[in-house]
Length: 276
Image (cartoon, rainbow, N blue to C red):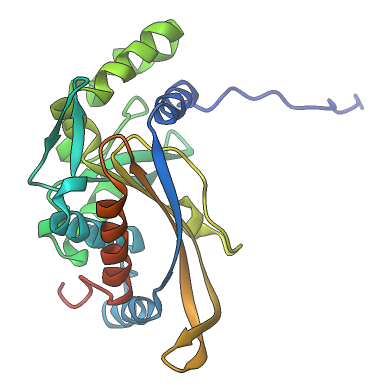
């Protein structure tokens, strides 16, 4: 019987070039990162009530997108993208990009989905949009999901998906630098804000430290049960660890602080979970 090989060689992930380029482009933005703890006990109770009533778990990411959309609608100075080197565009609609996990060609992939006009939708409506994207028929060359983003040629051109990793690094970096200064194209492809929610799948307390491609990005950590001050007493509560990234080149500190305070308030009030 031949001896087993001492190691196994795998191909790099299918999106390793794109992911690496996004991380590089994100580091070029001057994000200020805040590590926030939010009491989401009331929201978790309503999410469990929804599941008991309907038999289906409501998407936590969808609810977060609903709250983020509302907070940005109330603080529109943060719903912006850079335009060139000296201007920026403030958008009326809040389009939130989330990551949807799909099985493609036998492997799990996280694919972007842009929730259009998230500020005008309930958590239930966003939930149904995410579930539809999770069951959408796609092929191995798709880079995004959802009708709102598949209109872009890059989302459906298989030749572009295969070609991109083979482009020289300087050319790929140039493409991302141009996108970072093209507000309207960036909104169409990336939305106006983003949520990364991988941390919710773990139970180790802590905040994810990452980079972002939007003026405002949320990185969601775990939800843990811990002692919390409620009024004049200490009680066990469910606490969400949330990293909030704000591009300081485009947003001053005071508006950013007011936005974060309002976002935390919406999360604690279980905003968007009353309506279907």
